[in-house]
Structure formats: C-alpha cells, structure tokens
Length: 307
Image (tube, rainbow, N blue to C red; front, side, top):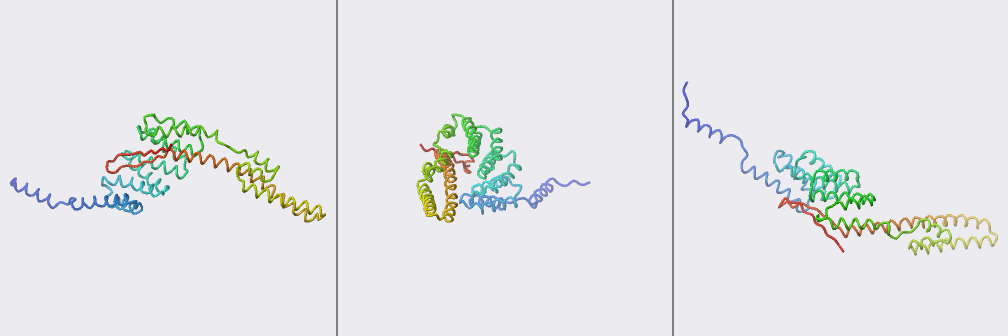
C-alpha cells in the first residue's frame, strides 16, 4: 500500500477547508446590521416596526446569541407602546424560554407593571413576589415598591404602608417609600362628608344636603325646583283643584326623593374625590421611572420627588 506524501495531504486539507461552507464576513455583517436596525427603530420610538424587525431577526437567525435580546425587546417594545396585554404575553414567552437570562428580572419587572396597569392585581403581586424572593439589591427594592403600589390600588392601605417600610434606608427608593407610608397613615384623617347627614339635611330642607357636600349650584337647583312644586301644590289645593294638586304632589315626591338620593350620592363622591386627590398628590410627589441603558447594559432608576 502506497502512502501519500505529507505535503499532498496538507494541501488536500487546506483545499477542503477553502471549499467547505462557512459563514462569511458579509453574512456576519448582515446579522449585525439587522439587529442594529431593529434597535434603531426602538430608540426612535417606532415600536411597532421595531417589533417586526426583532421578529424578523428571530425568524432568520434563531440560533444567534442576539436572538435572546430580541425576544426581550419585543416585550419591552409592546410595554413602551402601552400595549399591556401584548407586553405580558411576549414577556411570558421570554421568561419561559430564557429562565437563566441576565435580563430575567427586567422582564419580570416590566411584566408586573403591565399587569398592574391592566388591574390584574393578583398576577402583578405574584410576579413581584418572584423578584423579591429570587433577587437582591435594587432589583428587589423595586419589586417591593411596585408591590406596595399594587396594594395602594387595591385600597389595602395598612398592608401597603407596611410593605413600603420594608425597603432599606440605604436604597434610593427609601425617601419615596417612607413618604408614601406616612401619607397612607393620614388617609383616615382626611375630611369626609357623612352620607347619612347629607340625606337627613336634604330631607329637612331640599338642597341643604348638597350645600353640606359643597355643591352650591346643585343645592340652589334642588331648593328652587322642590320649592316651586310645593308652592304649586299648596296653591292648587287652596283653590280646591284636588286632581291637579294630586298630580303636582306626585311629581314633587319624585323630585323630593331624588333630592335626598342625590345628596347621599354627593357625599360619597366628595369622599372619593378627596381620597383620589390625596393619592394622586402622593404619586406626583414620588414619581419613579425605570429604564435599561443599552450602551452600558446597566439598569437605572429615576426618582423625582416634589416637596
């Protein structure tokens, strides 16, 4: 058996390497440019086109390392576009597919906020609890803060106040959390109008209940309308026009009853308005935003407080 010279074998190997299919520099550039194009659309705020390009990247290059971030950015793009339901679904896919990703907490955080915005409070609490149990540092503090905000929306003031105080004092969120906590303790001392008192006043003098709930225009209308019907009924009965007097009295009973019901409703609306204004003032005083700096791959919190 004849042995081939070593130089022929080496030349053959080199030839096979040359003709074997392998990704060229041009293809690598195309992959990079495709991803960068999707990223540029996202930065420009063109979220829907960015989603299309991220999906295109995943379709053509599913095994590329950047595909992982594309899955995440699809969810984030929906989130930025305020399409909460679509964001939740896309972020669920990311969480299930990349359970060990360095972007996992980012995805869970956005998913929880989207659930909160859709008033899926139980789902939001579960999502934030996952972050609280599995992470540390500001990731965990952000989740605690958002969990407390969910409880505020659920009107569980006591529990929300306690959760806010779980944020460590050294956290950048601590001032806002303590402001919220102390503010929630003042809810019981807000000015209130008693629905029973409003109804009783309206029964004695039509319009008095509305005046009590600080609605002077409604009070004047109720007083004049009921007064006119009562005066008309009295005049008709004095003139012995009992049929017309009875008809006017029937309608007056409706206006009179409506005046009482409206006064009670006004008291409830007053209390709700005062509470919502107080809570909105708390939100305005402690505004928190969160973003990921793609250039440095770092997570940033922006906290603004108004005094």
